[in-house]
Length: 220
Image (tube, rainbow, N blue to C red):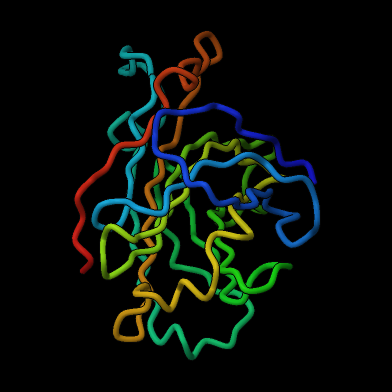
């Protein structure tokens, strides 16, 4: 697989468990394991990414303003325990002028006893040649006890051959039954920060400013 490794230490809390962070087009093929960052405990459902560095002279820039480069999405999967499909896709949502969706494998993607989860670029085959989206994102599976919610976060440059990115071993299926499925519903939340780069002033401060903070969110 061609997926790279994200080796920035960050300043958030890191889980002691291990998760495969893999590339899009080859998400169900064996390959290298990239370093990841994750936390098993987060208040009320999801951790948030800190806004990365961007230049302040954005008035002359074409495209979304900084305030439009960050977005949130909640996916409520009904009757989760009755799902027999190999994979499920969320509705499409838009952040930073780009369209995204969440993809999950309820029984695992080339692994057993795990929930696999990915963030994907929608309609990637219709995008212009040479397209590239650089984003950091956090995805959370919500527990009825907010302190037990599970999240993982990472940074990735999405492009033609890596149009989604995520984790084959996001969490063990046995743990999904421990408060994550409530009234037959499983709730997944995502926060996406699209990072706009300028040719003359590329994004450069991730190693010192990329960090996670906790945000209070209700379960509903």
